[in-house]
Amino acid sequence: MKGNSATADAAAGIFARHRKILGEGAWVFAGQALSGAFNLGGTRLITQYIAPELYGIANLLQNALVLLRTLFCSPLFAAQLRYAPDAERGGYRGALLARLRRILGWATIAMELVAIATGAMWAWRAGGNPLVIAALMFYIFVDVFRTLEMTALNAARRQRPAALASAAEALVKPLLVVGAVWLCGPSVTAVLGAIAASIGLTFVGLLAARERGAAGDGRALPVGFDAELRRYALPLIPAALLTWITSVSDRYIVQWLTHDPLGVGVYAAGYGLASQPFLILQAVIALTLRPVYYSAVSRGDVVGARRTFRIWLAGAAAACLVATALIIGWRHQLVSLMLGPKYQDAVVVLPWIAAGYLFCVIEQVIEQPLLAHKRTGAVLVAQAGGAVASILVTVWLVSAYGMPGAAYACPVYFLLQGLIAGALVLQPARQRVA
Image (cartoon, rainbow, N blue to C red; front, top):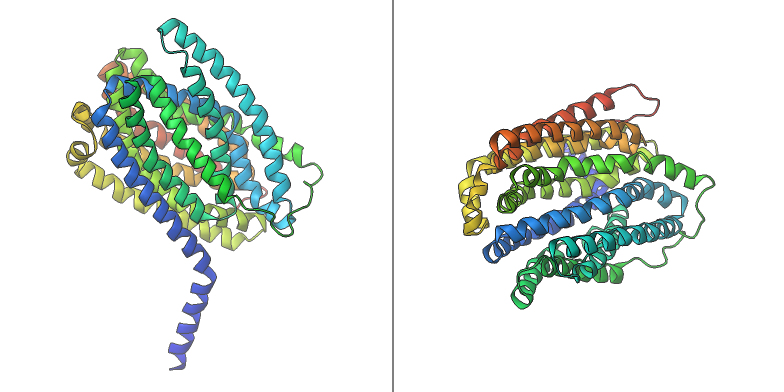
């Protein structure tokens, strides 16, 4: 009886210690499950009513905007996640967010200038609607600051409002896109403006959910913080560009070598369908465990950090293996159910994209010790290897096989990047926890 009682007490103690993590994980799972369902349903709706040519062109422009955010802002978002535990312990969360908002404000101005020049050139040379400039500028502003607020919620482990905001945006976006095309006609301006409107609605909701006046949070940033922030973030600027190249450049290579917007649209739709389950799984696990892992590293808890990392890696690998098997086995049914009639050729890319994202998610987990211990230069090396491989292999295979060749390349470069990241993590370092 005493043994049973001791076991029960131990189990209760473990549950009490991890109850907050379990609660956060439940909200993350609910938010990602709803977002995934809405995204899949939205993809079906959009591909039912929008031609692949328009879908492809809009996807290329949207990913160009992602490139701007990646270059100007993603390193700051990564820094926000890493330094949030330090700011929590030091009582300067408010000062950290204020500094990041100020830097992002200047970055947004620079991005808007690029958008004005690019939109004007596109409208002049391609005969597009000049209103696309306004759509691009609005998209950039709301995208940057929506992402900042979402990152702040995740860093503070406030998963419920983040989950609700993510699900709401996934629900509203396809409805606005289809509605805008129906009201204004099929155009890039209508599509991008509708997507920007859905992001803007999410941003307004996040502002309403922003935490106000946290107790003990009024201290100034530590002396030398700006210099440390620069050391952390600067290597992530080229790393962010390389990440974009690895993840998105294949659409541009397909367009460049095949001159086929329809093929780009079919490929983009298939890529989004195959990658969506992996993005959901990665987000559920990362949003739950990354704050825990970074907090353990921040306070020097070697045992806790190592345990969290192993759970993270094992959970991500197992979940993605199951997802890969299901997508390969049910690819015909998935394409038939989730994509419109004009997109059925996407079935050929699903197995290869699924295999690629299996390696991609595992690589992202492997990189976390490098980010947690501020070895951002090593992250740059891993990203460089993946980016160079992605361009070389994708150009080679698209030249040989056309649009499907981009999918064939996907597992190759993500696997290579993961191997490089693993080798860098295993290198001796003065401060490393894995």
